[in-house]
Every structure is written in structure tokens, then in C-alpha cells.
Image 1 (cartoon, rainbow, N blue to C red):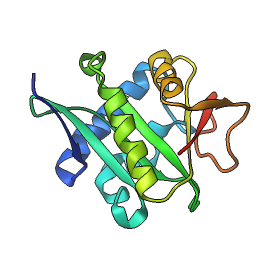
Image 2: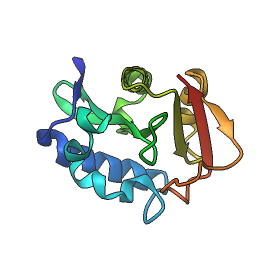
Image 3: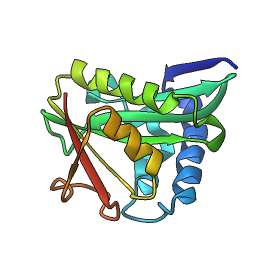
Image 4: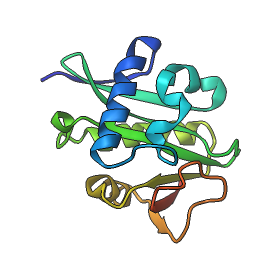
Length: 160
């Protein structure tokens, strides 16, 4: 098994879109108020650029796209970024890919000069929550003002 992690390009947009929507549906994240419904999902490579202080990376197993994760400013903040759209196909889980993707995104966030990283997720995404706790995210009682994902029920933040 050959595993690689690469920056998003337009050639991966359709696969990443399909994965985000499929995995979102698996966990009930369908419709407005959930990340898979964000307009950026249709063309992630357009939205995640160094110029925007954002990055989205793609996980490949044997050259097949199996997931991805990103980081971008939260509400145009200079200090707070958001860990975004960590989604992996079922066959890609259990290989530490989520950890690798998260670590690379948090490193990019530090390089972009952010001091904190926020995320929102769903309480039924147990493995993701466990990963976020492991890398130092702490739970919040409510979302940060301005979150787009009003249907998420877990909110976390990490000092970088």
C-alpha cells in the first residue's frame, strides 16, 4: 500500500467533493448547516490557496483519493483559523491518515501565523473527536460567533 499526502489541485476536486458528500451523508451531515453543503466543496482547489492563508491536502492510497483535510481563516480572522473538512473513506480509516492530515494542517496554520485553531463537528463522529482531543483540542460550550455550521453540536479550539 502506497500512501501519500499532496496539496489539492483541480484534478482532485471532483473526487474530494464526492468523498466529502458521501462521508457527510454517512454521519448525517446533509443539508444546510453542515460542512458538506458549503459552496467550496464543489471546487476546493479554488478556495484553498496560500494567498488566502489556507491549505487543503489530499490523502491518496495507491494513487486513489481517499480523503483530505484543510485549514483556513475563521471569519477572515488574522488570529483564528479553522480545521476544515477532515473526511476519510471507510477503507482509509485506521491507518493514522487522519492524524497525519491534521498534523500537516496545524503546521500550516502555524506557518500562516494563526494563534488558535477552531473546529466544529458532530457528536457521532467519535473517532474524529478522539483524534482532536489527542492533538490538543479542547471542548467549547458553544460555537464561536460566526460559524457557518449551525447544525454541528461539538465545538473545539486549540492554541497553536
